[in-house]
Image 1 (cartoon, helix red, strand yellow):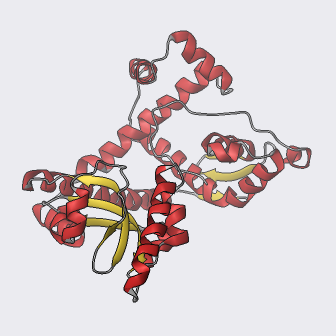
Image 2 (cartoon, rainbow, N blue to C red):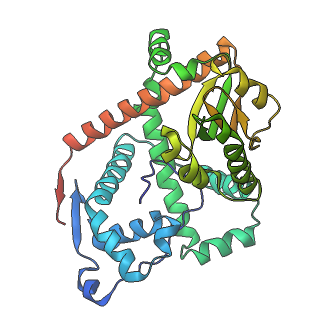
Length: 319
């Protein structure tokens, strides 16, 4: 329900928290102490409201607050981690200048093609003053800098780690290309006289797909193979592993196309080409693997760093 953000340089959808009367007395209650700083109940709920998904924001107030209550401990932990990173940045002398904040604002306006008026109206609509928004951006710049200094800049992905990643993720190292395919499958009838009736049935289902009905729903309803429960998703199939009948059909298709029914020795198939994955050279594969291995290594190091910050901090939770 919530997506915990480490660094977000974008429009923050912060809305005022609606506090029901039963919770009004708790509005400024301290819910955590982080070293010399406190986190209040109102701050926690304002951040939960800001980070809520669009679906959650559309809920009725009572339903939304019920979800918030069930997520209080989880989100408070993320808020404590956020506060610890800010404190570490300030303690080590990391700074964010006004020019950097201004540059970040201009970058956001450019990204979303917003004029000064559009930007101001957007902030106003979301219940955020310009000063509050600039302060939030400044905090995120500080966190970005300290994370780079303490974690990201210390990461070195070795050739051995890239090799290990490729061995553990063999599909990532595929150089020959292939396809992601979904299918609706009808088993070959034992009685040859039933073939015509099966063809009519398959053609009827294919027509319904081409008429706009959902492929996955029809696969769940009609397909006679194990992947039917997953909407007929066959996943990634290398080109060299395709049956010859599949290869003959799929080479004439574009992404998103649905085939007419065709026979194999197993039965009748209707396939949808979900993705055509082009062949890649060794350099591209290695580069992507190094990047992904680096991302995973970063998360491991980042989580260890957060753990170390928590271990040396005074944290008291009062929920």
